[in-house]
Image 1 (cartoon, helix red, strand yellow):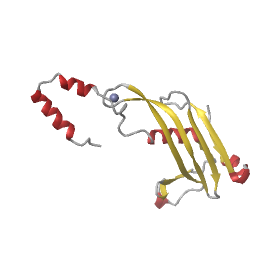
Image 2 (cartoon, rainbow, N blue to C red; image 1 turned 90 degrees about the horizontal axis):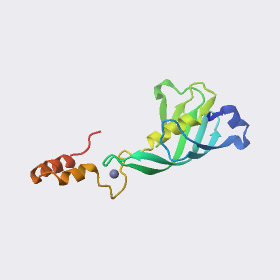
Image 3 (cartoon, rainbow, N blue to C red; image 1 turned 120 degrees about the horizontal axis):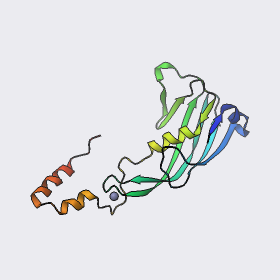
Length: 164
Ligand SMILES: [Zn+2]
């Protein structure tokens, strides 16, 4: 299903603000039910601002015990699109103010809400996926069966910071 908003639609709306409700699944995102977003898409002349909230329940796999668990997704969107090409020196994505990026529309006259939401969901996934505070991963269960000497080695490995 297409979820595209044209600049024309936005500018014809009252106060040049279009309210867009997204309630659909997103390809490549394993969700339990639909991803829901209520977005305010506002034309500010040269820029188009997309803000709002995104919610959904994702099916994730725990990094420690590999168990599937439900993750409550809930985050805000605040994104600026530049209608005309930004100056070259800024590159494709420019930070307008802290945490807010401007995306060059490259002469396109519409905004792909579906694609925007996909990217935002991916960005908002937790770095470390853990099923819960009571997670006892296979790693730890296996350790119990290993002799004490070997367990010390395991402990040392675990203290090391995870490389990025
Ligand atoms: Zn777990």
